[in-house]
Image (cartoon, rainbow, N blue to C red; front, side):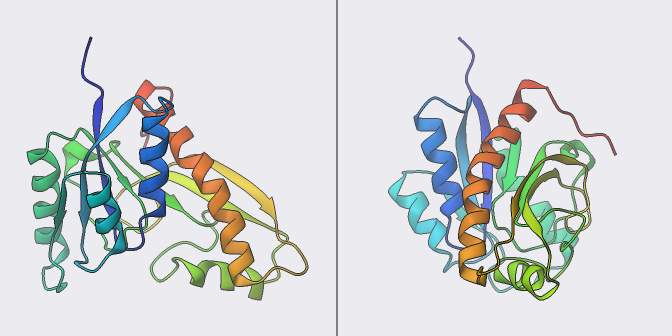
Length: 200
């Protein structure tokens, strides 16, 4: 029987998405294994989650001194050194310049219905605050392939929820995250099975 695909998970924050993926894998719901957890921040709590899950972990450029090209080169060198064939951005907040060989092999989860509320500066609570300030009726999450721009690659799938009259940033964030927990594993399954492919 062939080895399950190895996936690198790139993180900058708390790592709830990493934990969700690990749970889905342990339950046999995802045909892969996490081969590396990579962060650009040494203080990311996701690294502690990775330690508890006994996953390999590495930090690249925590001082944010490298230009995009060099940072990206080191990131993908680490991913390849750990034998990973695919990568998932799970709250990863640094821009990447993808090597040609990695186009179509990197997925990102974004907490809004792209192309709305995407791009540089739109992450975390900032997204949900913007959704509320604009008076949107619906929001949700998007899984898309990564290219060389923030939140701009081809969309794999979206999940949509209504914005409720009494929603706060916190309540909206919590409900969107529940959708993310479904969307990212589903999109990763579709990607690994070849059901979806990157089409620039």
